Length: 168
Image 1 (cartoon, rainbow, N blue to C red):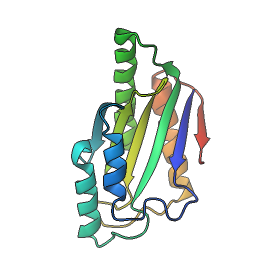
Image 2 (cartoon, one colour):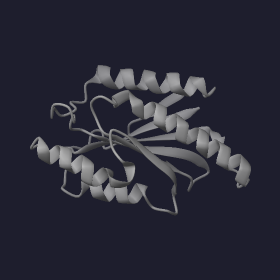
Image 3 (cartoon, rainbow, N blue to C red):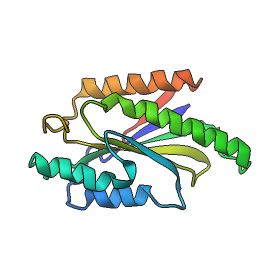
């Protein structure tokens, strides 16, 4: 079982300020929380600057700047056993990479695997500006449904079944 939480849905002011990229990515890069990070069409370590540069290049540096989702794994509890937890975290990293490929031809996607709670979880930060043409992501329901199906298919490859959506 996994839970996919969309942060900022229904909050028009969330992630709209100039510091949105930098503050969230700074949080995700916290070494006390971070196991490993990666990105698709972006370098996760420099994602704030790179995402901001794409938005500026297309003059799209207003409104919501990014999408933020957290995928939490109930079936991958961290136990404190180094070998066991390392395997779970590496699996989590691989899952994150495969999920991030969904937007590979449109939106920069950085992901951060965190180990600071009882269960491994992933922060996905997706630039809302399409790096190919400058169009902004428009929260189309069908796109999100396709993304959720993509997540479910990836999870099934790892024998993780059941995805609960949390939009709070």
